[in-house]
Image 1: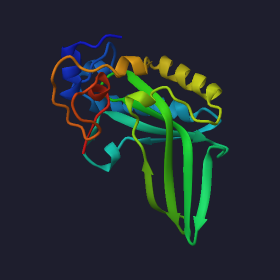
Image 2 (image 1 turned 90 degrees about the vertical axis):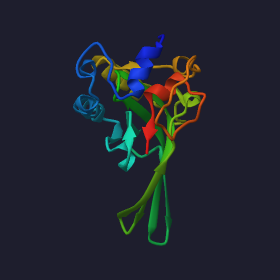
Image 3 (image 1 turned 45 degrees about the vertical axis):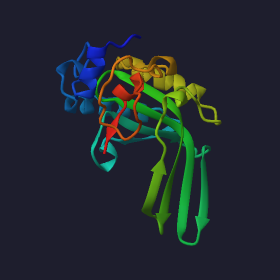
Image 4 (image 1 turned 135 degrees about the horizontal axis):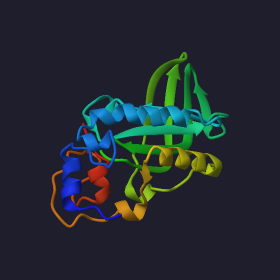
Length: 195
């Protein structure tokens, strides 16, 4: 897929782009309800758990919704206990659903949650980089990935590849992101976070 300068510039300015609602509306807030429907369908996949961050990581603006997918049987999660602290470290699948256009990416991801006496204490995760796109966790995800791809396809969401997103931009642009620095790539125009 070739991305034109005007298209990418509009995305960075906060305008949605697409051939169907809500992306054709030009307003990103309308896309959240649509993306929530997709998350609901993904939660119907019996073998996985899905957590979605629609809250822009608690601050700023995120051009995407960050999904954390793990195995329901916890086969991808290590649990450790130190005193009253319990930490769950998961090596699962991370998906970004773009709020600005009908695109998505996935990659292997690791995140943790720490609880103190069963109350949330802290958590952390990493962000997808262009070179991570399309990677899978060690635990078998092939069956679930096919179901995920089918669900995204039913909603008109296109999974982009590393090759499509890892291209350097041929023009200068200011992107409100803390995730990367110039020179920017196509990836940065679609998946950015301004804290």
